[in-house]
Image 1 (cartoon, rainbow, N blue to C red):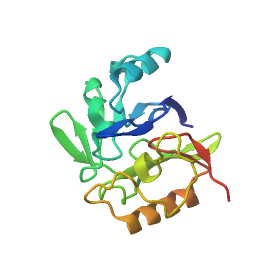
Image 2 (image 1 turned 90 degrees about the horizontal axis):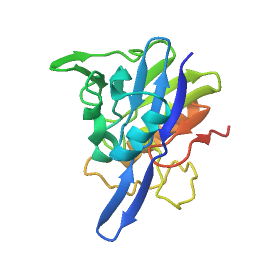
Image 3 (image 1 turned 90 degrees about the vertical axis):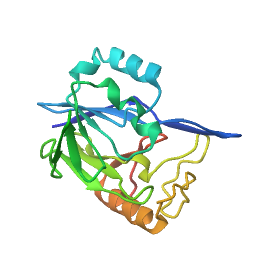
Image 4 (image 1 turned 180 degrees about the vertical axis):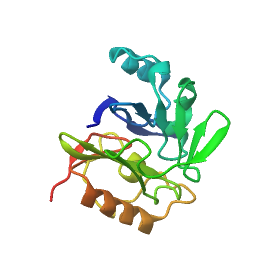
Length: 195
């Protein structure tokens, strides 16, 4: 059964002229693979987190990217040996080879789910663990630092990406809340789904 370790808890702070943000980055370990999700853009924090796990960047088999925003993807290039699973037309990149993948690429314990809304091409993971089903949600759910972390279906997405679709985001939130026991947001603390 897969395990999940949160390497970096994502953060997002609005600045007078921009943002300070980096995504939540997780290490998923299966019997056969080590997977990094959304490596973010804080190089020092990511390398320190890998060091605490006694891992080098070469130990990672796959990098999963939920969507295209740089606060989630900028450090993907650190993992030179890894294959990249991306939101981009559901393609797995192995150097210059691009292959389609199915929803259980990582094994039966991990499902790749389309979760559009924050941006049109957005993916999440649903991981079956000993704790229950855990959704690694990317920015389907995320909060600014200091904001009350309430999973409100109708909460506006402050990023306002040009291809954001609020109705699709609501549907993706409903989907993850129905499937998961716990959700790891793109920015903020992991939370338990109350039913």
